[in-house]
Image 1: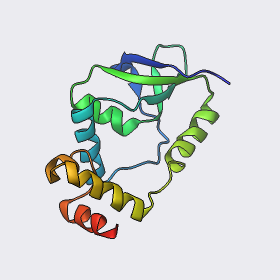
Image 2: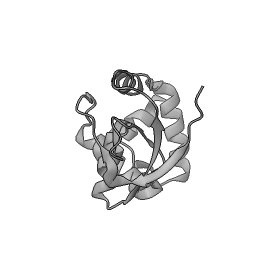
Image 3: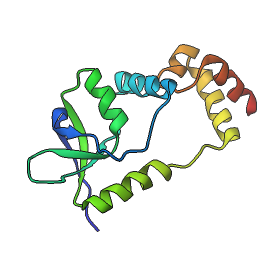
Length: 141
């Protein structure tokens, strides 16, 4: 098993892959941006090197990379995998599809607990929910 290490690389050396099927709606895109603004780039981008030109291609994290670029970040934390293109393609699917879904009751309880210590604006920062969606989820608890 290979040990994973996070490296900080020039954000301009990362390229999106042409096969990424993942898309974000406007609310999730805004939440991604707000999260990076508020907490920094805390989730590394997973990349591979398709050739020896010094560039990296993104396997997972294209949306974070895009928003970080738009915010003016010059470095990105990356995990570089030693894989071939077939493995990179498969990992794109795996990493997009195996994150799981939330349990609505547990999410409602967690959001209600956070609401006790955060005002609504602070709670919504970086979240892909509207104020009314948040209120509905908190009531589910």
